[in-house]
Length: 511
Image (cartoon, rainbow, N blue to C red):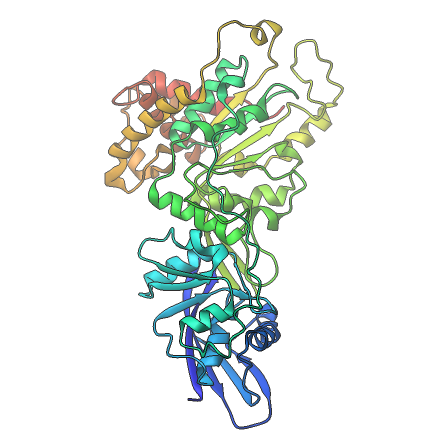
């Protein structure tokens, strides 16, 4: 037989596409031709495959080998096609039996060992969705691939073992000479390293953090250096509810594609936390890079927290690039090689000093900034982004009395219980509208079925009439009022809830 077939998966963003790998052996001079929009890394597979097959005991044909990746119009990249291409070539030479509806996802070493690849979870999910339930992977990807329901995972250490499984002559195979690859041990999720009880004082800021967590609202904290802004932001994930099955699969797939850390034993159940440095570029935050765009910090923070410390020091383009995910919960990154659509529904947490020196308004502090320096510092914060932030907090310095207080602060577990109760009420109320948190309620719903009533919103309407608030701000105040009502066990927000929501929105951004 001169034609062989195998199957692999091409990832564009988190979307996987089944790829049929065809291999044909011609009658002309030796050559290895790879067709179907492969990138440079995939072109390098030719030499890896040739060496791996030779060292396994099944050298490729000395005639012309043409490999076609179908569909030909779909861009393909990465080393995850190595095994599928190799098996299609060996099948074309008659060295293997038919592989059937099996998907092969592994990189080959020159000596024939199978190496794990990134993005194994979304790739296996795509294969199962396409009706291909049997997946062959490297041993290092076994646990992660098995997380997908309906997947029959076959894990091997070497190409020789795969070839033997699919009918190769064992007398030709170098089964004893190939060492098994050293794979990183799989990891499970560990317990929390931080707790809200470690934050001394800051009662107002702690309540603001609880409100933000309960309704999935974005948060801005302004205060002098050392006030505890970073401590509070780091503890926000500890009071967020555990991820649902669907959310956990999404988040784990993103981190699998990003290739961060060792293979996983289970799904990520805890809200992720990303804190890029203020020197981060647009590409590192929103995604991109050469070839097909890779996920950035905003996508890796999906269903969790994206913390921008020293927010005014970030490049203005980075801040403005966050407008789309803050509004839509998705990031579409376009490059010459194609466009990748990534989920990016995160809680944005911003932290800033009151002025460049950080001493403006601080008791006992001496601000050395001029009015021009303060205005320039404030202008670095993107106005459209700030308009999307619901909760704005002043975080003052903690006094010695608060630090030495004998009364212990509430733990993350106590606050998380109230947050979970508020989220439960929200899910039940918002189920008819297709959302789960107050931050996602559409404006037409807030002004229609879920309007609190004219009596409760009188102060808010007055602010709108005086042009003190945008239409977006109006809706965000109502969303925040619903969260405050949920925490207070109110059926409908009252005037106090709306007034308190207005206070959160009207606090200063920076000096």
